[in-house]
Image 1: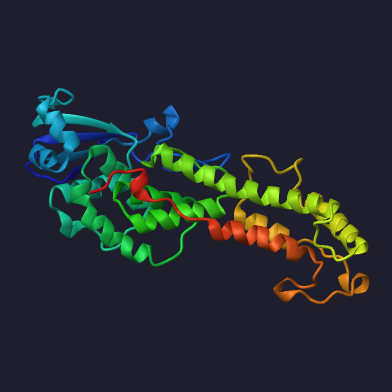
Image 2 (image 1 turned 90 degrees about the horizontal axis):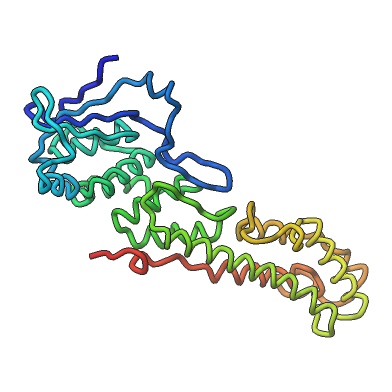
Length: 329
């Protein structure tokens, strides 16, 4: 199959050969893992045409620390071929993202689209990080991100945006994204290939588990208190009803120690809040004659005990600070 050639620098002296172009990117795997660059089977790779790009070694070395080091090493990783002084091999990169990156490096910016999908920007971020050319790409990256940052993102897109905020330092986005992950991620974050420091992932996972554990311990504390004289029930009857209803709800909503253990797979602070706020209340009006208690309903209600536990933990969540993990100028 004939290779596909991009004439990015028509008089260029360098040929970049991209093998296995467009390999799966940020693939979702079990246990909330996100992978990059997963290899295709040999059969599918064999059916792909090789992608080639004619480039200029001068432009590459001026824009990229990676290629600058290659030049300082007399381009020992590159070999001459035909009309080209240098031939460089790459694999797995996204064809479109690499083409956009090389157009920026070679000043062919009039050929760039005015809008870009987050997926493509994340792929370009991985490339910019690998080839160490963030400075030449940053202006375009921030321009393309403006409309994207006007709308809410979730799930996989949130992790892609986090990677961009690490490579092209964005303190506000980093803080908001890590706060959202701590609050809403239904399991530990695991990344492979995205340019996010492992220390960031570890910190997000640790904070997430810390707040979930505090809620679990808070529910256990309510149960313990009702066994003593420190419970919320206004009488023996109410306390007994409270204890029984709380224990049954904890079990029926699978929030007991039998089900809820670290790393709390399938649970987030938001989903845990939903389950707890869904606890079924006993018919307090028929049992207890105490007054309604503020915004928590009946004075002896489960909500009066559980709501502060959940809401206090969610209110305490703060995002991480980028400078604690990445040196920025």
